[in-house]
Length: 188
Ligand code: 5GP
Image (cartoon, rainbow, N blue to C red):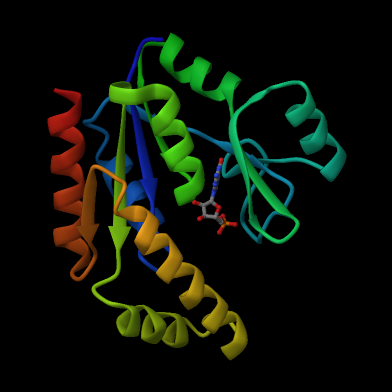
């Protein structure tokens, strides 16, 4: 397989999508975003084939049975997310590198399969209390959901230690610059 794969993982609320989008928007690094498949419904503003391939439960199951995923995980109860082999193939066969936003378990799985062809970057919050405060300030989740996310974040931060690089998102612009620099070093 041509091309290298950059795996980005982070607990929710750590600015992962903002960092990825900022780096992709600069457009000077030869890499394309891997669009995952999921059985969760689209959120407002999301569309099929752009943010995700939105599949029904049956379609998702069929893809698993057909071996179409390089990895998939049940990230939240009943909510499956997976990276399609065809998506990686589409990007790498055109000679580009891949950047993927997947959860820690999926990331560790991809790294096991691809070895030195892949690099894992974990984006961490400065500390758990800051993460809790960010989720509260965001105002989108009920207190019990926030506590679930915080608990999951603690698990993810533990797993994130298996990644080659860890970027602490304390100041967004610094985190973007650091992530960029780790990616550039890996690709060159
Ligand atoms: P959201 O529903 O907020 O878009 O994503 C929820 C979580 O699913 C995020 O942690 C994201 O990284 C993860 N995720 C998205 N796509 C994939 C994928 O293809 N595989 C795995 N394992 N996780 C994914």
